Length: 302
View 1 (cartoon, rainbow, N blue to C red):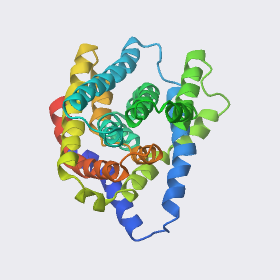
View 2: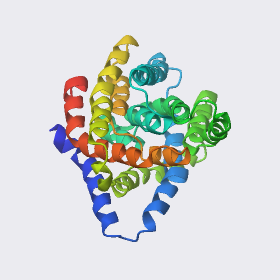
View 3: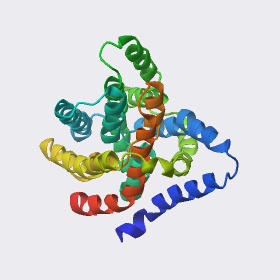
View 4: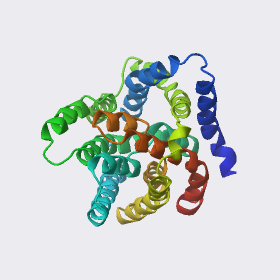
């Protein structure tokens, strides 16, 4: 039953991969589609979801705290691992991103199937905390000691991130009680409806199978930590914060999906090992077909 429920999500990823390899509708379409989604469709979905979210609910607020704690614990453990096995920032940055960053489109699509609108609303709360924190931690990991100029320049770009701005706008509307009047809610929902299917197609289009030939040991390690260890950590943090139901599911699902494709862009901007990062994203995206059902059955009970 679980596989029947979630297979369309992975089917869209596979369809995107096939279409991109056949250059349909064109090779130029996919970068443009990803840009449209990132700057317009997905922010619209976040604003419309957050504007009516129960931001004063104590359990929802605990979800934000749990998201931050899970990511910070993971980064501390990775820092300890780096002390035992030294590695340059060019390689350490992709490892950190491969463990703490997440494919938002896949996570939201799964939550929409499993929990409906409530899942999307709770996911927007998670994103409001995890997107800026994950970007900052990734930048720090990719930056060699002393390279403060590059770090602060990119930190400024984080503050202009459309997803972060959309979360802030949605939170402001929810806290003020204004919501989305005069039909603006319906307008944004219509725009946002195209975000998840288009995002999944773009995930498939971005897969780089040739990158899987690089550093199999390193790729296998990040797959195991991201797709198996992180969900277990998230489940433990959920228990610690007293989360249950949809909130716990959101924390676990976001910790069980592969690294975000945008991790590759950030790695390249920071002079990191782009080939290794591409391999991490592709390996995790392929492996998640097997790990997600296992995680949902064992940790979520679905």
